Length: 480
Image (cartoon, helix red, strand yellow):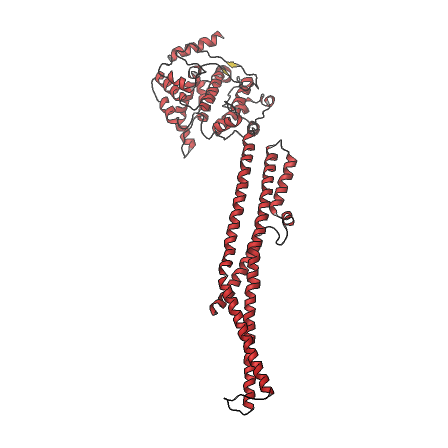
C-alpha cells in the first residue's frame, strides 16, 4: 500500500498533464454541442471562405470549380473532426479529468481523513491513560466510574472509526490498482479514435480527389511552355503543338520575307506577352502580324523550353553519328533512319517544323535565311544533349554537328518527310498548302503509312545524289 500511495500522486500528475494537453489540441470549444462547435471551427470557416470564393468566380472558371469542390471537401472534413473531438472528449478527456480531479483526490482525502482519525484515537487513548494514572490504580486494573467509562468508550469508538477508515482506504487503493487496466484503456481508445478519424478523412479525400483531378484534366486551357510534348498533345487533343501551329501559321502570313527571321532578337516584353497568350491558347493574330520577330522568338522559346528536345535524348547519339558519316548518301540515309525511329508525336511535329523551315528558305533572297543560317539559329532548339555541366561550352562544341544534322533535313525536307502538308491544321488560319516538289524521289512511302509500314521501306529507299536533288529544286523554283 505505501507503494500504491506513491503511484497515486504520480498518476494524478500524468493524468492532469495529459488532460490539459489533450484539451489544448481540440479545435472546437470544449463542452459545446456539435452545431455550436461547428460555427467556431477553423475548418468550417475555411470551407465557407472557399464556397464564397466559388460563388464569386462561378463554375465557368477552373478556379471556381476547384474552390467549390475543395470547399465541399473541407466542410465534410470539419464534420468528421467535430465527431472525432466529441468522441475524444467523451471517451478520453472526461474520464482523465475524473481520474485526476475526482477519483485520486478522493483517495488522497481518505488518506488524510485516516491520519486525522488516528490522531483522534491517540488523543483518546492518552486521555484515558491519564485518567487511569490519576485514579491511583495499578496498571493491570481497569479504572471505574462514569468518567473512566466514558473515556474508554470514546477510545474504543475512535479505534473503530480508524479501523473502518483504514479498511475503506485499503479497498480504494486496491480498487485503484485493479482499475489500472481501465485507465490505460483511455489511451488505447485515443489512438483507436484517431485512427478511425484519419481513415474516414482519408476515404473522404480519396473520394474527392478523382473529381478534382477530372476537372483539371478536362480543362483545356493549360500551359504548354515547359511541358512535355506528349502531355500537351494529350490534354489538348492535338497532333501539332498549339504554339508551333500558331507561330508557323502567323509567320506564313506575315513573316516569310522578313530579313533575319529567327536570327534577330524580338522585344523582350512583346515576347513575354506572346508566350503568355500562347500558354492560354489565345492569340491576337492582327496584333502580332506586324512583329514577326516576336512570333519567331516565341516558337524558338517553345522548342527550347521542352523538357526533352523534339528530336529526343534517346536518339541524340544516333543523330550525331549520322552527321559524322563522310559519304553524303550514306549520311542522308542514316539521318532518315533516325527520323523513322522518332516517337509518333515527335515525328509529326518535327515534320511540321522542318517542312515550314524548308518553305522559309524558299524566300532566302529576301529574308537572308539559307538552310545553313536557319540550321545555325534553330538547330540548338531542336536537339541538345542530356548532360549536366556548362551547356554554353557544350553547345559551342556541338553546334557544327547539329547544323550538319538540321541543314540536310531542311534541304531535303520532301525526301525525309514526303507528301503535302497542311500547316493550318485546326483551320483557324489562312496559311497555304506546302507542295511536295520532289515527287519523283524513288521508293517514297505514302504519307498515310504508319511507322511500321514506313520502316518496311527502309532498305528499298535511297536518296538521289545531291547534284540531282539540287537541280530538281532549282528547276522547281524556275518552274514557279
